Amino acid sequence: MVLSAQFTIPLLGVETEPATIALVALGFLALRRVFRFLKGSRSAYFPKVYTAFQPFALPGLLFPTTAWTTGLDWHWVRREQTYALNETVNVVPVLSGIPGLWTSNMDIGRQIAAGGHRSSFIKPESASGAFLSWGMNLAASDGAMWRKHRRVVGPAFGIDLYKLVWAQTVQTYREMIGVEGWKDKDTVDIPVIQRITLKLAFILISTCGFGFTSTWATPPKAADGGMPIQEALKLVADTHLISLVVPKWLMHLPIPSVRKTRIARERMAKFMQQQVSERKADVAAAVEGNTRADAFTMLVKANQDESGKYQLDDQEVAGNVFLFMFAGHETTAHSLAGTLGFMAIHEEIQDEIVEQILSVVGPDRDPEFDDYSKLDKVLAIFYEAARMFPAGHALIREAIEDTVLTIPNPVGEEGSKTIPIPKGTQVTVDMVGVQYNPRYFEDPHVYKPSRWYGLPTDSELFTAFSVGPRACIGRRFATVEATCFLALLLRDWKVQPILRNGESKEAWGARVMDAHIVLTLGVKDIPVRLVRRKCT
Ligand code: HEM
Ligand SMILES: *[C@@H]1O[C@H](CO)[C@@H](O)[C@H](O)[C@H]1NC(C)=O
Image (cartoon, rainbow, N blue to C red; front, top):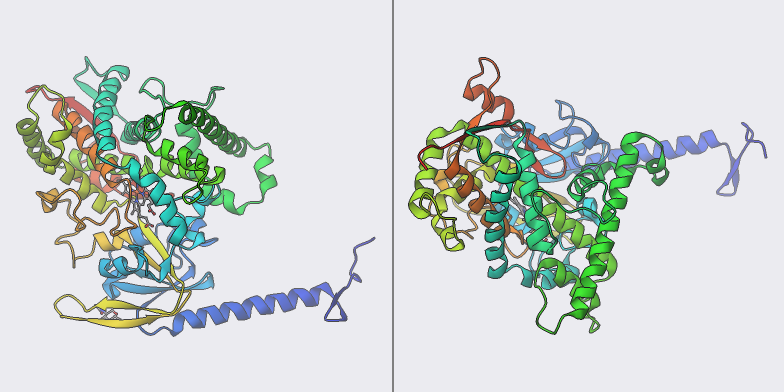
């Protein structure tokens, strides 16, 4: 058969030229666009922010944020302007995508993101896609499916785990000092502090969450060696958004970066299979009630549960392994790196923190788990960094039915208004917006850990882990690890910025302490110098 201009396609019983079909299709797309645009513009309740493309969808996420479009980091870049209009805005894409509400009000955030039995809002699949390709999991699921997943892993998150996290953090800190060769040094320059914090957090989730053997000298590897798992995981996560949209065969092209990504995916998959089958054997061999209780064992047990109610299939186990390995370390590592960046700028705060560490723990002994609740100022420097650089930066939800939102009146006015939200509306809780909202924080642009001093460790006044039943399951895991690590590090070392020629601390802060968003939000590469504290 020869393809030519005469080639025709039967449409509605009439022979039609391809060009006509293309025109009809284009016309249809244009109409749909106009319809969506008008639908978005119609809502009269909130100020509109016009943009070329929808922020977290293709092609919008490929463009940097500029005056005409909203990229992946638009809520960071425009954090000073957007919510001056209203605490909630309607982001209306002109060329591609659907309109959606973005809010910086946590009372609204609670209504849409906290979960609970009667919620009219779910996590749309488009928002969880990043983790779904490995299998359904706790973070991506909703309703009964979510309850099942949370029921399975929930029991792993108890006091025994946190004690283990504390002890493992002390051990890992000691290994780090030894392996990095810092024992006999008085100053150490670290060009990118994230290298340290990512490794720490990865070892912690691997050992405490999964029971994998892992040390500073030998991080987890697949049995056949090759690319370390931490690197594979990072590559897979960083390239995830792209790999969702390109056709499968592209992944087999002989381009070095594509090949590396493919190897990383294969390595992750193999690692998961291997670990799952080893643990299955462990669980089978163990006497009833005498097995480990880490999150991974819980998942494998649920996989083998014959009674069915809380059973997870192989895909779901893999989905959760990938989720926990990733969510359990990038977030914590970014927040820790941010904390150290702020310490480098604020010497006076650092001194105040060290005073508390010395008065609670003293100069020599290892910090103990019982010290955790007394080190509230140490936790506060971590909280305040996570407020200003929230790793979980956007909670995306969609109304599954016609519903309403209760909108608090502006600051200074009592009461609230009720506003109808039609089925299908996307509402995003902007954690950057919330945590820079002057309604909740005086001088939100100032790093001021003292706002958190004395706060009970699980208070919902701190919102970076979200709130309610759907809040972060790893909150205590992260805060216990961070408090212990910071207590050890700051007691031994003074953290200083590595300045460029003639650069002031303030200029360093302005240059370095800026957000970088891939899946999670973190601070750009932070160069710091550790100087041994002589007094201890
Ligand atoms: C500073 C560190 C962390 C921050 C800022 C953070 C933030 C968040 C936020 C905001 C959510 C809610 C997402 C949403 O509702 O759309 C969340 C959920 C979650 N986090 Fe974290 N997280 C951190 C550490 C961890 C750790 C250490 C783990 C695992 C050990 C973890 C595992 C999870 C999981 C599994 C969920 C989903 C929970 C559910 O949907 O039931 N996170 N996290
Ligand atoms: C924001 O919009 C809501 C809904 O229209 C309105 O009730 C509220 O007063 C507005 N807030 C401000 C600060 O303008």
